[in-house]
Length: 174
Length: 125
Image (cartoon, rainbow over all chains, first blue to last red):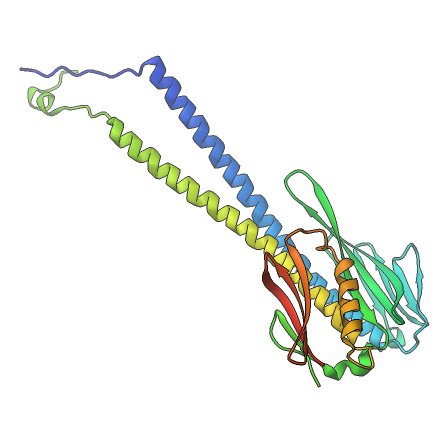
């Protein structure tokens, strides 16, 4: 007996169910793809910003501690600090340090970073502060975070007391 | 086109059973859940790393200011640490706490997140 070849047609209900499942699947795939891409971008940006903060911290403290005079003046809408011929200026996404004999060093920064300088007198301490304004964007909003890099004018004299050990643990010993 | 009788006999169209579809959907759901959990975890780790680096910067600023002190007065050290913490960007986060205490002639200043230390400094008095 011959077996008859039949083609199965989907019913309307089956088609609707299949379409709904497909839409759900495609939406979740696109959502996860966008979320992962955004997250990846944020992680890379924050790692890059951290590296730049470390570099800025080192350069800023070296600049202040190597300046012979303690008379600092903050100018140009808090974007420039000078002491005699020494100066640090934030301009066009770069920070330019001018030190002894007009030796110039420049650091190109990310477009999300803006720098201002300020001065504080707290508890008989003269502090010079580099404020790093870091822009971070999440899914819908843009936030600005301010990170302080403090430099104490007299700190270098006692710097031999400072020993750094582990990444998260710092010891202060004789 | 005519199909030879022998092959006509063997020709069989198979459909997915409801059990097969259910198993496939279940595997898909498990994969999606684990992927979502991984992404969520990655987000959490990123935030934690950012907070840790900010906490280290607070302690670094505190140490920079401590260099100027002629003596290691615990009261002054606490004041400086509190000042630096209050001016930092992580001060408004509810899960972040600062701890300052003396233990065996050592002043311990630390920053904790959900009662877990993320950065600390031990100062010999």
